[in-house]
Image 1: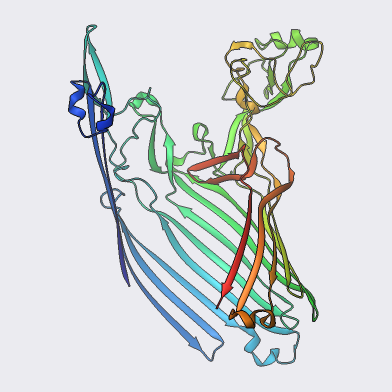
Image 2 (image 1 turned 45 degrees about the vertical axis):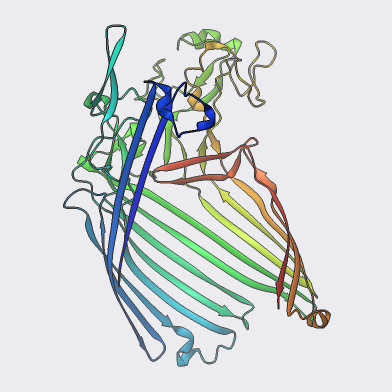
Length: 490
């Protein structure tokens, strides 16, 4: 098997000021005189793959699948564009063995083992080559010239430093699983346990700006992880007129950095620590707000009542980033799971879906409190009136945020949410025959109707997400929907 793909993107823009007539739109931009601009762009990358796969079955009990693929990604560095990824899967249909024939309550039982290597080359075109940043040079007070530099650390998104050795990220995974069908199919499901090891982890790494750059793509080291996935399907009640079915999924995944390049044990500026998850937050630890009765103690730290107090772990009366920052949360949840219940009574169908994610931390919550912008309602400090507040005193640092405002930026993202409620009615063939319709269903569906539990009261943390290079913190707006529909078959 062979496949290939190509990404091709072109863009162009033109602008002018004081054109002759807005009715001409962009068809006469030259009428704007010398005050105009032009811009074009091109981006391309390709992926090419080859794969071979073989299957073998013996006696309808023992199953084998083996495959290997070769992938080439143009965006990686020269000499590192190609990599191979083998996989192997074994299956054993235990229920077909003779010694299982007397166990009538077991209708199906299959054991599985799998091993495979997958790759990741998810970077942009030309990211290994570096880029140029535009920079205007002023000559006197009346003229300037456009020039280019390798990078400008002062801009919001400076180009990344080139990396001529960037290669594929590879993840090797072992998986053991069981599929089961029990009690005349009243109970079915699967259990999967897996371990993973990722090498040449592909990440954006911060680097000292004295190099002229602030970051680069790099293969930073290795991670290892493990997890378990459960799926349970039950028929709780089954009669002539009424059935109740439940489907449950649950998963737990954990990982940690096992090695960093160059023998390092930690890279604090990237919040990477050997033995910890790759997605942790590293910051000062919030310890409340300084009270009026603590004015003398606060002064030892150069602070005053109404400002944020953070923990001084070595008790030296100095808060510094080397000694007093700690891991304050993990972006990855401890576990996630969902449950769908479906109830049918005669022609009426009702179902609801509950989903939960537990134990993750997301970065949101700090406020500037300068009194200049509209903001959410918060519990803030007022001298001698409300000093047990969560937030510091507005204006305690002028128009700037408190020095340690970031310590308030880590929230518990745990939640339980009703994601979907559906109600439908199926017409019987007897009701439909005279209309020439074989099936007709009327239904109503409500999406995201309400949250059952959430520690955070100002964001919908169901919309928070994380992968190795991207984190989303949720949304202050929950998208809800009410749908009415008809399914018709003739």
